[in-house]
Amino acid sequence: MNENLNTIHRSLDKELSPEEQTELAERVRTDDGFRRDHEELTLSVRMLESSGRLEPPPGFTASVLRRLPAPAPSLARRLWLVLFGRRVLHWNAATGVAVAAALLVGGAFLAQLRPWGDATAPGMTVRFTLHAPQARTVAVAGSFNKWSAGADVLRRDDGGRWTIDLPLKPGVYAYMFVIDGAAWIPDPQAVSFQSDGFGGRNAVVKVAI
Amino acid sequence: MDETSQQEEFNLIRRCRDGDRDSFAALVNRYASMVYTVAHRMTGDAAAADDLAQETFLAAYGALGSFQFGSKFSSWLYSIVLNKCRDYLRTRKPSVSVDDLAEVIADCAATPEQRAASREAGDVVQAALGELPPEYREVLILKHIEGLSYEEIAALLGVSEGALKVRACRGRELLRSALAGMGVTA
Image (cartoon, rainbow over all chains, first blue to last red):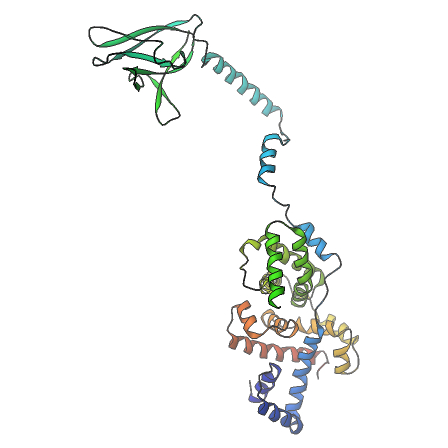
C-alpha cells in the first residue's frame, strides 16, 4: 500500500495526529488524485456506518423461546415420575409369547425353590455336621429357625464331630454354625454360599423333594 | 456498557442459568438487533440471518453454564454468530449476483451523497459487502457497523491488531472497488 493510501486509512481509523490531519487537509486541497482516493474511501466507510443495525423479524424473541429445550424437571418431580409416571409399553405378538414363556419358566423355578418355606411343616430331614474338637458348644442358626443361636444345638461324638438332624420343608435356607455361643462361621462343607449383606457370607442348603 | 448495566446483565445470566426464561427473553431482546445485523450483513440473506440469529441465541442458552463472568456477553454472542455465519457461508454459494447489484443500483438516487443517505443505502452496502471475501467482510462489519475497536475485534477473531488493520485497509479498498463497480463511488 502506498503512503498516501496509508495516511487515508489511518485517518479513517482516527489515528492521525493534529499535525498529520493538517497535512492531510492540505493534500486533499492540492492533490486531485489524493482527493479522489480520500473521498471514495471516506464515502465507502460512511455508507457502512450509516447502514446501521437492522431489526429482526417480528416475533423473533418468541421464536427463540419456543425453540428452547424444555426445562429439566426438579429432583422431586423426576422421582415422582419414576414412581408414578405413566408409561406406554410397546409390544407385539412375539413379545407377548416371550413374556408368557418367561413367566411360566420363572414361576416353575420359584415354585420349585420356595426359598423361605415354612420350616415347621413336615419335610426332609437334613443333617448338619461340623468337626470342631476344641468347641464346648456348637449350634446352628439360620433362616429356618429365625437365626436363633440357641434353638438347635449340635451333639458331639467322641471324635470331635458335632451333629444335628433337622426336619426342613423343601426350600433354600441360609445358615451359620455358632461356636461357644460367640463365633459365627459358615459351614466349611457347604456346597454353596451367599452374601450376608455385611461383607461376610452364609452357607446355603437347598432342600428338595 | 457501564458497570451497573453489566452487573444487571450478569444477574440476568445467573437467573437464566436457574431456568428463568423471562430473563433470557430480556437478553434476547437486548441483543437481537446486534446479532441479526451481523448475520444479515455476513450472509446477505434475511431468512438465513433470522435462522442463524436464532441458532446463535439457542447455542448461547445451551452454553450459559460456561459463560465467564467478567467477559462481555456481547463479545460472546459476536463469536457465536460469526462462527455460525462462517459455517453457513462454507456450505452455500454467495447470494449476491451481478443482476442483484444492477437492480439495487437502478433504485438508487442520482449522486453518491444522495445514494448514501437514501433508504436503499443499506441494500447497496449489503450488495457491495457480498462482493468481499468473508474474512474482510467480518472485519468491516465489526469495525464500521458495530463500532468495535481493533483491540476488541482482535480478541474476538484471535488475530493481532496489526494484521487486523491490514485486513481492514484491504477490505475498505475492496469495498471501494465494489461500490465503484456499482457506480456509487466512481
